[in-house]
Length: 212
Image (tube, rainbow, N blue to C red; front, side, top):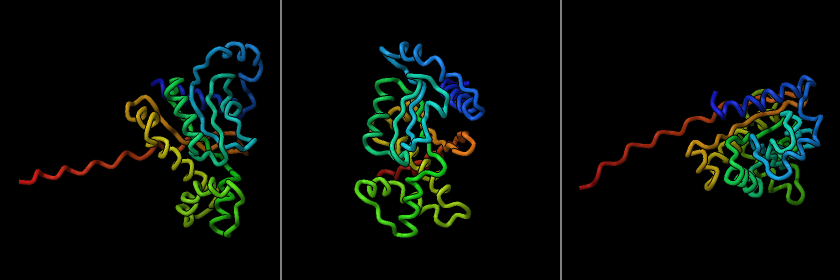
């Protein structure tokens, strides 16, 4: 098993402990705090929704200092969130970023209602929802729960945006030092489902022959 696969599996194992009410890391937090006080080397970074029901350290049963958590409503790639992930990758050596969407997401629900019903969005919320609208529009014709489909599509789109974001993230991906994966957390079961890997890049067209 590669180091990357090992990190991802550790998170999934922790989620299974969380979902089955058998956590290991919520007891001796004093020792964890003291051990991480001077420095920390997170096993992964997580871009998660700010929803109060979605706490990555709990969902993945990780201790103090083990996850670099970045949270913003709708887990959208806002610039401050991306900058935080760049810090985790370039300064803390993080090699795995998880974009964690979740079922019953209020931000995605608001985006669906904005598109389908024309609801108005106050203040800065409109700018945030605009980041989710493309996923809502792309999934409008799919059968079943529109909000669910939009959550999955928005999470997958954020993964691709982070993988190709100019700077430390795309550089680390290109060098093989970073993987960005998507996942969706089910509030009802407590379980996290990894999304499939991103599609391979399109092959470059054959170069044109030199002109004479």
